[in-house]
Image 1 (cartoon, rainbow, N blue to C red):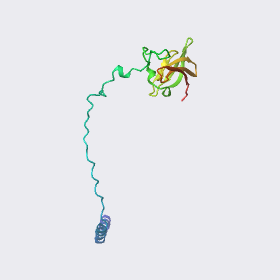
Image 2 (cartoon, one colour):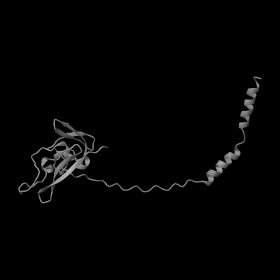
Image 3 (spheres, one colour):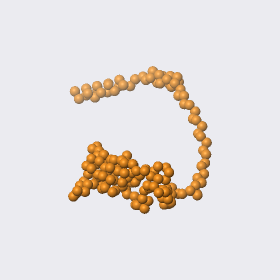
Image 4 (cartoon, rainbow, N blue to C red):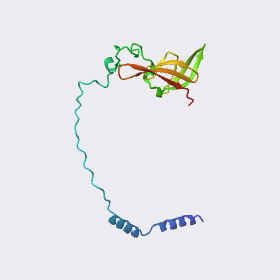
Length: 171
């Protein structure tokens, strides 16, 4: 009985060895009939050297001088204009569209607004603080909105007041 299993296994393996001439002939005929067509490579574009000649320009790695970044406001005219001597607050770097009112805090009758910037930071502001690109001055804070007075340039060197508001968003 012990010799039957090895004998059957040898017979099974012997059946796997056979004539593969027809398979080899089929592979040879397919290789002859099918020739791969590879298109020729395109001519590479001609390299043109670029001479960087900005020696007289400001380096992009050095902050601009104060004269280049100062706002051009004509203070000689007798009209409304922003206070140039006032130091700008953090939220004056953001447009009002990029700010969201997220809530309020109050203590002893004083109410503060919680403002979220587009980069996810939250700030506490009160009446009198500034925000927005156009010297937006907070005039009133309610639990559901903030009233803002902005100074918009009119193009002639004067500025006009515009009322805006930020409403509480519950996203």
